[in-house]
Length: 445
Image (cartoon, rainbow, N blue to C red; front, side, top):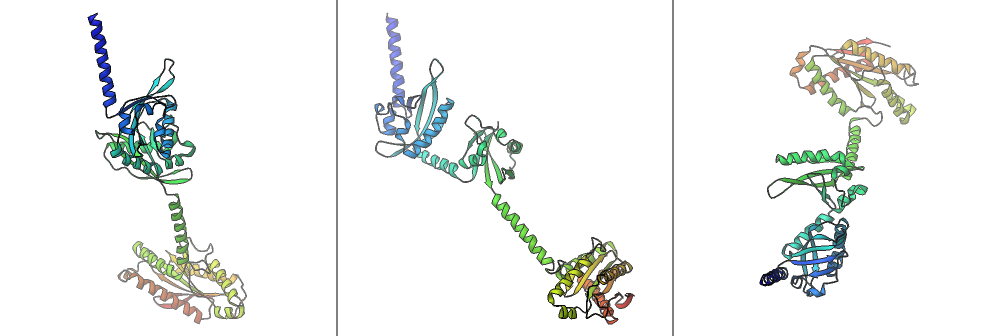
């Protein structure tokens, strides 16, 4: 009998001790039913919420929260109940009886009946008001920032993500029970495996530009480490740069158009003089370096001023375009360059062509223009013709190497111009070459 009484007394002592711990602990211990209504509460609730335990029984945690907070936490808790899982670290604001706010961190475990049905939760609330507001502010910033954010663990689970990330994923946004990143966007998972490996080696993680559903994102991963400095996950930012890339593409296209305008004559579509002067310097440098000849042909439409005066400027423009098309015919090689050098003058650069080859090209072009039989009443022939002067930088002319390129180019153009002047003086509609500064007729009509 004495032993039985001792056991009973010892049991009572343990129960009193347990209740003292529950009611005098800094943490609020509670139980709720499957609908979230309090069924038991420790006395600590009075310190936290300013109400005695009996006033919380039958109510839910959301009855003690501001409206907006109640909706947010109810949504999060509803997902937890649906999965019937334990939870921890659920930070929430609560309104005390005096109207002040206390920030609690809630954790709980599910309780099941003998049939395995969820009958409620048992848990604790801890006062974290000193840090809680800061935590909630950071959570709000994380959740509402327009930049998509997520955290991926080593197994590929999408541990957390904000609203912008959910919008990015769209229909692929995971449910609570389906958060494997490699299932959501499988093509990208290898990139994050590489990031994990780099993070383990303490190497810098590169940013990547990736596309998803017609959008372009700049993606940057940052390793998340535990207390032992082990990599447990990646925090990933997804910055939408679609508009930036589209703007850059438009700018590049605009620059290309501007470059076309800067390099081409607007009337004929040929290269302009500014571009051709630069091109000639490059071709001369290449000819001297590789020791091969270079020729230029300077062509001029005969009696063009009279053509403009009699036919009109519109006809003159059409004439210039016709000559330009003829000069760029299949007779010229792809490496040859043709430009409108000024007014009715055209320059042809012939890399690798010696004087004889250049004269043949020039004579062919002259014949092509004559063959057009374009009426020209001011010309003695009665149709459109051109005159051409040809000059050549001969193979082996190493003495030119001692001169600046611009002087070589200027001298070459001057010699071609002198030959062109000679062609004009000798009756036009002919090709004349320049040999060492002296013009000589190579071909006549």
